[in-house]
Image 1 (cartoon, rainbow, N blue to C red):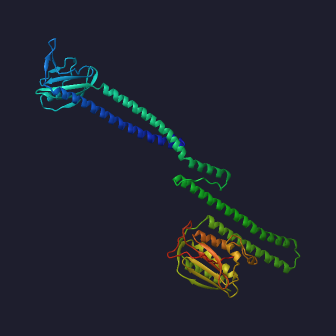
Image 2: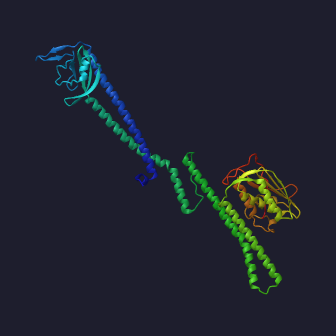
Image 3: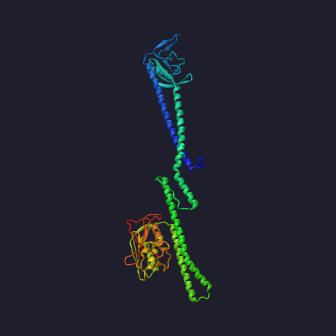
Length: 475
């Protein structure tokens, strides 16, 4: 693991921000330095050109000093010494300097070519008496070249000051960038810190009601919203599981108590008449059957919530036809009338079949002997209508709740979970279920399948939303 990996995310973010700003400041400083250097050199060279034009504007004048030495008379104040040099170079290589100059400028082949008229003006750099000079060489007169040189010490001094200033600016920019990087990383990671704190609190306390304040529409706000949504879903799932366990324990308590009482009576009274013993044994078998059905349906509910099966293309009309055929065998005293129109959807065949079977069982249970149960399939909907006594208006909103049993249904066998399973299957397929009193008596229940959700169910082509109708079970 590298040293960078050992740093906190905030430190890494601050380091990256500071590094990016530092690179930008360094790049800008380098550009500024190059531009300033070129401008200074341009001005420096232009100064040499201006001086050269002033000198070459007058004819070459050779004079003799009091000591009898010839010198170049440029017709004005001297330009030699530390400030610069002026020198005439003849085509034969001889030179003529101004009166106040003591050191000659180097004479190169290129300088002689200019004196000979074979080369144009040019700039060069040279060193004289440990002084770096900038030299302009140009034609002066036939067979003569003029060299004007000026020390670059002043230019180098100015560039040095500019360089130092830019370095200080760069260091200051890096320092400011580091501070701003820390501030920005602290502000940017505040939502992440709140998310982390909330996660740790949920882990420590198990309190799924924890929420993170959300403000804005940026990515971190969306992350916090998604986290809140996840917590809400987990809280609802936990609540539903707690409620299921509570309801299941309550529902199991009564048959277990009755079963235990009957078994204790059978164990104590060995001289019980055969008729009474047979009656108690029948009660025990009946209670065991009810408990088996209850446990089976509890397992179905739990499996539907925690282990969704893979979806596939389903011909709803064919599937319902198969379920109706089984119902005809199980309830020969009831007549099933079908109107199954072709309908396709994307869903889980087994769970859909279980939901339809529960609707048919409920309808058959409430139908009188010889009564009809009408089953219709159209547009991704399964409609089941019986001709029984019907469900009371005040019971309709609750018939799909777990363990709910209307007063009239408590005399009949059942767990109160059949319609809850129907509702679960409908919602898992992006649909819904509803119940209503049918005209002419009885109950009509409608199972709507379609939409899109975790079960990957999709609405078949041509399906339109219709008012919730339904047929519900009160098992």
